[in-house]
Amino acid sequence: MTTSTMWKSFGASVIGPGHIVTGKPNQDSWASFHHIWGDGIVVSDGLGSKALSDFGSKAACRAVETAARLFASATAAGTRPNLLEDIRNGWLESIAPLDPKDAYATCIFAFHVGDGIVRLGLLGDGCAAVVTEDGTVKSLSDDKTVGFSNLTNALTPATSEAQWSLLEVPESECEAVVLCTDGVSDDLHDVDGFMTGFVAAHRGLARATAAREALTMLEDWPVPKHSDDKTIAVLLREVVSDE
Image 1 (spheres, helix red, strand yellow):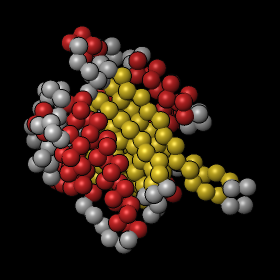
Image 2 (tube, rainbow, N blue to C red):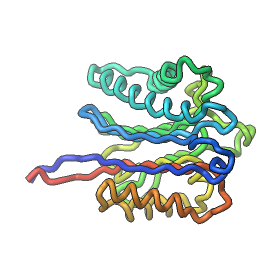
Image 3 (cartoon, rainbow, N blue to C red):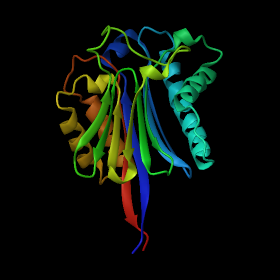
């Protein structure tokens, strides 16, 4: 019996109570992509102090998919592009002709391109976590204990590679990847427990059902005074029989 690996994704995003009151749009965005060259997810949170941050977060999602495609092409050709530079440049191209300083946004991604590795990156607030086959969790999060806690790394014209946190995990060890903006991660007291429980609860569901239940969870978030937008996205790996 032969097997093959399939990847599926789902996610949800809700506007925070604070933005509803002030009439602002949801400044979070998320996206997934599934192509012959690879699969991935991305979430982004537009900085609240920026007038067009909702456009910035959408541009971040587009930039990651484009950069991942370039990465896949280069990997297949035996070369290696600058992934993080491509994301920044793609973001700048996507928001044009807007002034970049009005659209700064965080960026969290995960993707694979068929070379046996799942790659994750985090710029700014939020969390990226890999739930492995043995139930352990490997994660990335913004370290506010270093430097000034009120400063958030984000996509800007001057974003450097040093501002990113990166993680690589073998595909064979990866059961699922969960990405969330800080509207979710800031309220998690047990990140590992949340991630493993969330994946277990949604793994066997159809994509539409899983997305609907994730949306309900965010709408009924148990911290009613947390006014931030909330977004979560999941990439699931499944091994299926070809017979």
